[in-house]
Length: 183
Image (cartoon, rainbow, N blue to C red):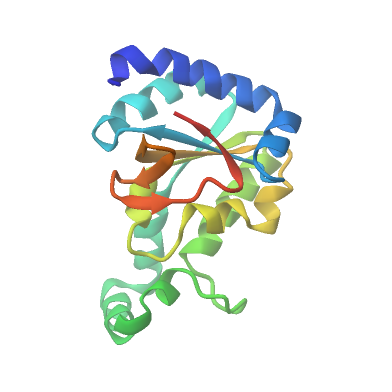
């Protein structure tokens, strides 16, 4: 369905899910997240509409900006060298389980927590840039902090839903285990 014919119902469904957090947790297997699915080529339209509807109640967390910030903190040459040296396990560059290392995943979680501390609903946008980083939607949704937030996390998710399967960026099979899907 196209944006023009679909967006009103989707945003109504999103509003309902946000307002019914207890029901959300039951539907999401204890999770506290909403995947807001839309065709990748219509991303700007959906983000613009969300900014219009939710300008006072949400914190938009632009993952693409966090990615650029992460690379800038290392410096391009240093990042490039490290990335190339980790060719066989590139995912560790962005999401390393080592608590001593502050990586892109940690930055995302920090921004989500900060939004809730400011009594805002965290909306992750521009999540398509996570492709290839090893950071999956389920990693974020299952994080202890996210599951215990006072507000649900809304992940704007460029994807398609086909035959009971969700495909990130229209081709990569994605998990909906700890979330409610708004499609």
